[in-house]
Length: 97
Image (cartoon, rainbow, N blue to C red; front, top):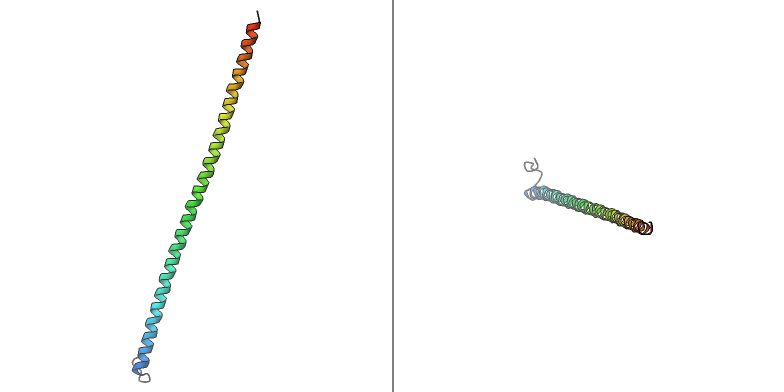
């Protein structure tokens, strides 16, 4: 169209073509940058999700350890209580004719 028009000179036509080419290059560069940004954002989101899962796992492990320690303390207390009762019964039997 523009190239076929006699109103525009060769120099004008070259400028139009260069403008079109430069705009296309700029658009493609912007699309490439946007794609890189999206990839980086997805990677960051994925890393954050992994970090959150690790944090939750650590919390769960710590809670399980705490529960295990409580259960072990109770078990030790029960053993000590049974031992104390057995010793008291033994002492009572020693003193009972």
